Image (cartoon, rainbow, N blue to C red):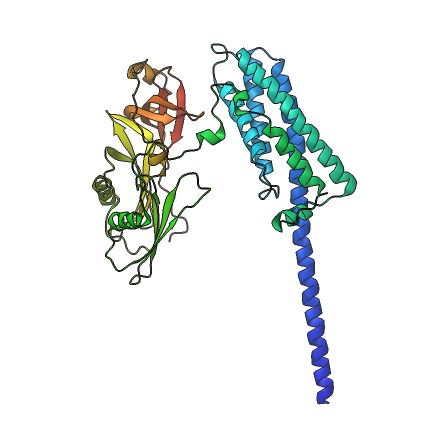
Length: 448
């Protein structure tokens, strides 16, 4: 009897294991099929978007009037942006494809800059038309190669999951049609120089903020440790580890990890190798009951900046999340706010200590500036405003416009209905550069 029961139990166990294995296999297959379908959709979307992009660039070449050309260039920008986003949905992270992505980004930036300007006063010049012709030719090359890959994928029923597996395992077969096709596209794009977009064009890579403007000597690991101790006002019983960023980083820096054995909290910090400037700081710890106000935190933040020789800062924005103050400070030069030079800070409202700090924008934008004289008066700038907006504050400011250029503006803080807006009017030509709606206090849902 016992033997029969054991056999029955083993049979049930084996059957259960087999069923579990079958279900696991089914679920795995379902996930693989879902991923494959997403990759196939993204690939065919990309091919179709490049078709549309090529045709739209060709259409702009035949246009002459601003009424037609501006929306056509805006459509080129939209299609290039969509194609760039679609590339990111394909399993190409381990395959060098950055030149093609950069090319699509540059097409979008070039067409956007041309679309938003007044083409009646500043029509496309011969160099820009030449650029459009070259873009048309190059997009045709990409289109042709992608169509060829698409034909082979459909004809041979090729799978993108095989591509992902080959890239992930570094086992790249010589006859992988999809990988070879995308390598051909990348090689083709590499022949297209940045200068072909025209001498005034600034590409995506060059617009990436770096720390080339900062000054000072290179510091050592030990000096980085001392800077961390001073900046964070450490007591001396903490465990500190310092690691250099190594080769490949766009800007050399030291990563510092501080462990407090008493509180069990950890603090992470990056410091530039050149000059020893703190880039960012974050401390992981719970914030307890609020003991200080948002205004007190702002005063502490400004005092902290002055103590560490971040001078000429003023508060730009302050918000509170739970028991943490989130503050943004910007520099001011001769009464003009320099918005690109900003520092963000988190202050715990239980004890007033800094638990978050980011000076990346400040370090990448800080330099000596000659602020130009406005070409229009503030009274003229006011007339460019929506008459329904009630102006509460006004000042001069330097901001980054939509094409990533610094421009001098008149800044107006005003209200419309129950909402508050920050509006920037270009101080040289009166163009409305930017309108920002300020956040209203968040309602607390579900509160009894």
